[in-house]
Figure 1 (spheres, rainbow, N blue to C red):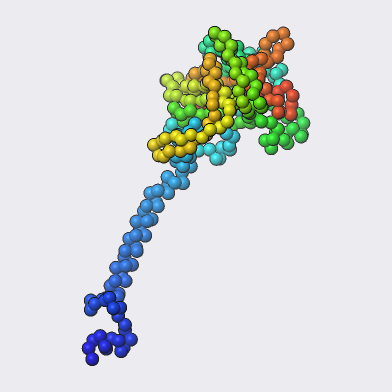
Figure 2 (cartoon, one colour; figure 1 turned 90 degrees about the vertical axis):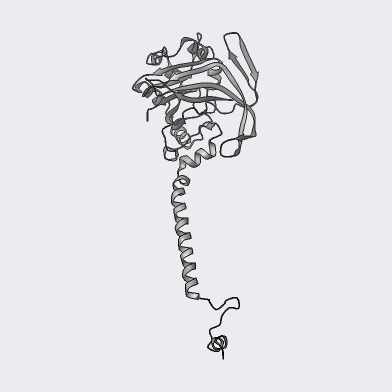
Amino acid sequence: MDGANTSNETGTARSPWCDGSYRPKAQSRTFASRIFFLNVAWLLALGSGCSLLSDPTWSRELEKQDEPSAVVAQSSSSLPRLNANSLPLHAEFLHVPLDAIDEDWWAEVDETILEPEVRHSWLRNGFRIGVVRGSDEALVPLRQASRPVDAETELLTGAGVAGGSPSGARTIPLRLGRRHEMPLSPNLAGEPALLLKTRVGIRGHHLPSPQMVLSLTPEPGGHTNRCTLQIQAEVHHGVSRQRFVAGDAAIRMAASRDKWVLEGLHVAWPTQPAHTLIIAPATGGDDGETFGLGGQILHDPDHLQDGRYVVVCLRVDAT
């Protein structure tokens, strides 16, 4: 018998596609080597990419790099990590009665740090703005006045169901040169009339479901301050529309509403550490009541305490 018949009789069968040079052990070693090198390459690829994929700053920037940042309440543990181009904005919304922000309290606020024309533009529309320098001791009376007066209100406020206006304190990462949006009020019901007083007259609109929003854009500052915060008041209204936004990474869908940019309600604030910008309703007349957009927007009708208004406190700290 030849070698092939001897192999068949001893039970060592060969595949029909193999020739006489078939070496099963050598081929197994070659196959195992290929698997080993593939595994090593795969592990190296994962090692170089996992730090980017698991970084919340990277993933969040990819999702929102082409859209305005909507400022929402969130805990400090869920905030993206600050980088060299980020600044922490501390925003605090205090619900206080009008007697808590009387002239004695405003004596602790520096209103002259802002240009007179800027202050007058806000004041003629019912807003009063200024800066608390250094320590925030001037805010302590407002925080005390902002506390709920009864156990039921305290429970509902802590659960976040006591009103639709922004409340509480939060830290928001701002990126230099990027626009952020911070709502000052909930959507007003119906189509209320909104009046804006300018240097040349009064402009008014009936807008559906209007909401006042502050557009915040931090820009690089000079030698004495790290950034200048550009603040522009806007009214967003109407239904939300989706649109395509082209970016460097991809084309994304962004939802937005029509907006009315409020002429004159703009301030370029050169931020300083431990300085707090105050935006509050102004009072006027013999009765000392609020007026204009400030009284209309900053009044919180859904809050359980009647006659309370929202005072906005903004501070940008150095990192």
